[in-house]
Image 1 (cartoon, chains in turn orange, yellow):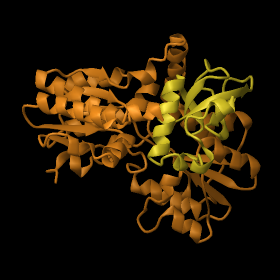
Image 2 (cartoon, chains in turn green, orange):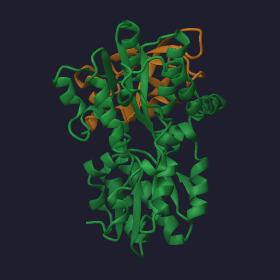
Image 3 (cartoon, each protein chain N blue to C red):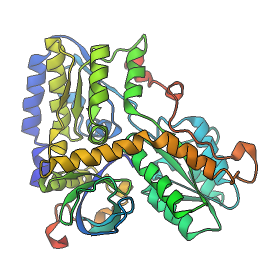
Length: 320
Length: 95
């Protein structure tokens, strides 16, 4: 456990917190983008270690939470159709639609399954050719390549009873939406480490420059987050607005740097090609219309439109 | 589905780059994982696995530390790793 403990050492945490307190001369409002980071901040009470003048506002970093209500309702309608198996991540099943959730639909007899990968859903389709298997695909940049690859494999294998109800969102547009809001209060962001390990930092440089807001790409453990907050406060106090990488240990693996760059590029290409891929797949598989009920047909969207993203209240309103 | 869990590549199967898969050890729990996005990965490497795909290669120290952290915060179950079957940091027995 020694590796773990050194990133949760209370003495080091106090030392970083002290450094933050010493550096802070006025109030700053910071936001972490990733839901995993929010989890750690809450669990370890990081906010309690910070001076009162540092306010942490929790960001929109949970793909399940930002899935539009209409898509959840659509998934519920699809699941209720006889002959349909609806598969999704466990988190998604608990999210309420307008009147019910997928767990309730399953309790009512629908075939709703929890999977850990889109490839698990594809396997269900492969093993059950008599059923129409719909994967409810949500996620940020980290998950989009996986879902795209499942679509590609299904197409490649000619599996005709597999479809996706897709709701993908990208992190940078969500950050822009928050920053463009007239009532925005966020002055610095802790960026999502894993998303950046897929996509790189390019878009974040643009956001930092355009909006004059510092962004520190952060890890997921208590000391990672304290260190990222410390780096953000230093930038804000010095009047800088740059992209810095606190989470460098995850991307600095130098066994063969070329391989890492290549794999990231491959994943990135997969994300970029997704809209075209889903559209062509939709055309290829449009023969299935869910019993020709227009309201129940599978809807394809490459990602949620900006207008469908809701800015969390905490980002704009007076924070309690 | 939000997290990426470290695992060690025990063996690799498949010629087609899109279907290349690894038999991965998550400190005692073993699963097949797609390696399409990490073509550089070889048996014995440590990888971060997200929704059934290896998304990046990491070093052993980072793998052990991250795995122990995920176990500590109780986040393994929702990623399909049964906590009772996994022994954090125990990579040697798997090799």
